[in-house]
Every structure is written in structure tokens, then in C-alpha cells.
Length: 388
Ligand code: CAA
Image 1 (cartoon, rainbow, N blue to C red):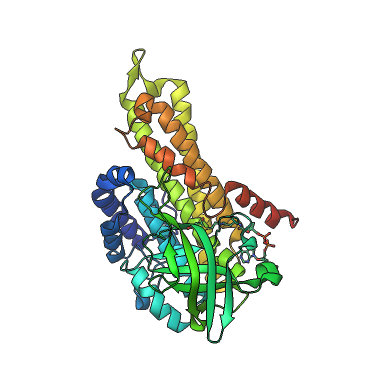
Image 2: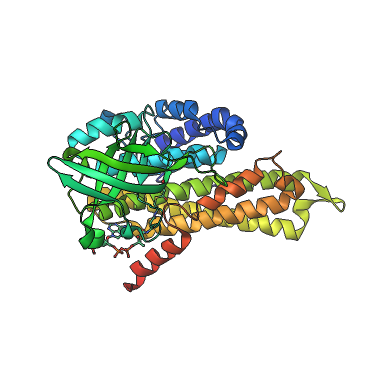
């Protein structure tokens, strides 16, 4: 973008440049190989932790970089421009795991769970979805039953990002089924304890190097001290944390959209047909114009959401609307740009020789996880009309 908004400071720019350099030098060269094999890129994830990218908003006292939400979205966008799968892991560690504990955790919980994840030595996961409970998240069937100073957890959770490699899981499960959403509680799970098992990694269309699986609880005994917040707070914690997560997914989508766009601009300047550069044909140039315009609009919504989240730290006001609008628009922009990028590249866009087809596959998940586009539209409309 030609104009740098005044809210972007020199410190933000330095972080953005560091993320860009790291992403282009260390991630871009291995992205295709990990996409093909589906192997989790543990070595680069660890390095990203050392760079401070796994806990950007976590205070330095807890192992993080101590920066703000704008810093987080700028860095995540750069990582995702190189590889969305690395960005998925970064996003969960930052905005679903560390953010949830920093916001709702006790001092003891922060000390135990945040440092390792913020430094990239440990991997965190967030688990809300179940095989029969996705968008309608309050209908979960897993249960936690109090037994003295423990809770005994049973049930099956699905589509858990990073589950195959996670050290800790922020888990949402039902402690009082009669109360519906108000009967859900949040727990911090240590995956090395008995009663926790991981399912097989899901074979996915895109973000293939990020690992996703089911997790199963079979009489897992969670100490009472691992309850996050109070009993019954779980649904609100899940939704509050997803507001932050959705800003991250919007930034991921923006990174994918930009990668698809930049590849397209280079290609239309070089590729010739009918005696002209293909970018000179209106059918191509209008695609470029539409991609660029949507990218900048998505960026504006993401920055507004990041600033709204910063504001909420003092005001306590929710930024649900801003987060959902950013996620909705940016994810549809990623799909729009990746779709056009494949079309512009023709056969080469369909070939694994270029990363364009990967952008297309990776873009799709941003319209699905952390709330589908339909759920985002529902949230936005409910907030605006007050109707349900
Ligand atoms: N912040 C704080 N509180 C919130 C909230 C938010 N953003 N959204 C809702 N709440 C509160 C409500 O105020 C309400 O509280 P009160 O009863 O005290 O008023 C309570 O939560 C219940 O709210 P609703 O009645 O609106 O709940 P609902 O059952 O109608 O569901 C929903 C709302 C928006 C559809 C929600 O279920 C939702 O977001 N669904 C999508 C779930 C989702 O995003 N899943 C993805 C999981 S993570 C993932 O993708 C995998 C991964 O590994 C990353």
C-alpha cells in the first residue's frame, strides 16, 4: 500500500520486516515440500518461537514479545504470504491459546502454560468442535464430572488444529448439561496425562503441513486447578477467544490473497498472447483491479478489528462485530484472489510447479474454520439488528 497509516509505528515496521525476511528465507523454500508430505514443520515453528512470533501479545515476563494486536496481524500476514500452514499454528498458539489464558487464567495457570507456548518450545491447541457439534457449538456431548478435587472428562472432540503435536489443549466441555451454553466449562489439558489420546491426522485439502486430528478423553482426570475461569464460564470464554482468533484468520486470509495477487501481477506482465502482454487485455486487467481493491479493503477491516481489540483492553467492550466482518471479508477475498490467480495462470495455475494452486487450496479453510462465513454473517446481522 502506498500510504502507511499513522497508527503503524516504527516498531511495527521493524517486526513486519523481520517476519517478512524470516518467512521468505526460512518458510517459503520448504512450503511446497511440507504441503506435499503433510509433515508438521516443527523446526521452523520452534525458530518462529525464538523470534517471538508465537506469543506476540504475551508480556515479556511470560516469554512473549510484549507487543500489540496490530503487531500480531502484520507479522501473521507475512508468515501466511509464505505459507498459510505455518500461519495456522502461529494463529492458534497466539490468539486462541495464549490469549485465552492471559485473559482468563490465574497467575499459576499463566506461569504453567503460557511461557512454553509463547516461546515456541511447546504447542497449544483449542478444542471446541465435536463430531456432532460444529457451528452449533453449545450442543456438545463430551462431559466433565466432578469427583473430589478433580473432574473426570469423557468424550470425543474433532478438527483440533495442532492436536497431533500439542502439549496442551484449551478444552471446552459440558459440566452441567441441563444448563446448555451456561453448563460449558473450560479446562487446560496436559496431553501427556493418562486418558488423553489423539486420533489419526486428518488428510486435508489445504494447510496440509499443519496437523489436525480428533482427540479422545477416556476418564481423563483434570485437577480442579486446571479449570479456566469458573464452572459455566466456558461458552463465553470460547466465544471471547474466538473473537481474537477470527482476527488472526482474517490476517492469514490476507496473506494468502496477497501471495496470489503478487504472483498474478508478475505473470500478467510477462505472459504474452495474441501479440500482447495478457495484462493488457481487459479480461485480465479487471481481475487485477478487483483483487487489489478487495485486498486493501480487507486490510482496512483487519486493522480496524485489531485497533478495536486494543481498545477493548481498557474499555472491556467487545469487538465481536469488527472481528467477524474482518474474517468474513478477508476469507472471501482470499478465495476470490486465489480463484482469479489460478484462472490468470491458466494451465500453470493448475500445476504443482507453481504455488498458485496451493494458495487456492489453502484459501478455502479460511471460509470454514473459526466460524464459517455463514456464522460470521449471522453474528454480524444479530449484532446490527438485535434480532436472533
Ligand atoms: N463474546 C462474549 N460472549 C458471547 C459472544 C462473544 N463473542 N458470543 C456469544 N456470547 C454469549 C452471549 O452473550 C450469550 O450469553 P448470555 O446468555 O449471558 O446473554 C451466550 O454467549 C450464548 O450466546 P448465543 O445465544 O448467541 O449462542 P448461540 O448458541 O446462538 O451461538 C454462535 C452463537 C455465534 C453461533 C456460536 O455458536 C458460534 O460462534 N459458532 C461457531 C463456532 C466456531 O467458530 N467454531 C470453530 C471452532 S475452532 C476451529 O475452527 C478449529 C481450530 O482448531 C482452530
